[in-house]
Length: 211
Image 1 (cartoon, rainbow, N blue to C red):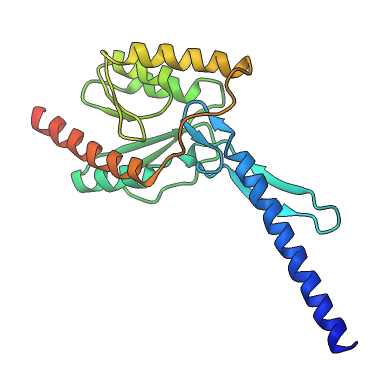
Image 2 (image 1 turned 135 degrees about the horizontal axis):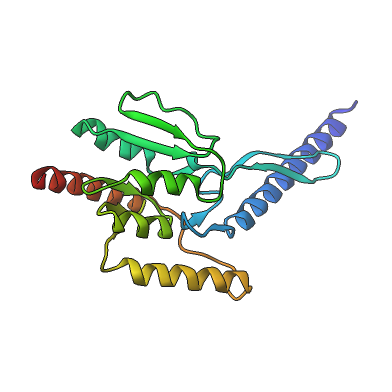
């Protein structure tokens, strides 16, 4: 093989790799338009997309889509605050959640069902407890039990605000189902994580002072 032929082969290989990278980037960009209506972020940011590959022969892209609770974007921040104050955490799921080794974390696996995890939480939560969720119907149930509720972006939900938030959530769900809305809220950002950490710390401190 001549030096000229080697150079041509190298350039062709590089061009093919670049083309594949561009295609994968396009797929990821499209997946960022797929929103989880309860978590309020896209499936890429939430970490639902796993093992993305491209077939060299056909150029087809394959990936695994995991819709499980380990995607909670602020679980590390929750554990950090809980550790600082000696608070027990219940991480509730109907399966697929990776065990957390921290001694203050209790992993709760419920039987599978559309609202099994929500039911477990709502039946046990009470006054002074803090629920971290983007599931608005669950948030409403927790507020009824006297719990404090916060979304992963740091937004507090209470008896005054939950009615309007729930109505908006139901309206947006209907509009998406009808195809009137194809996008979603802004992706979860670093500032959301920072705001959540600050507000959770403040909420815990107020609860301890009150209690």
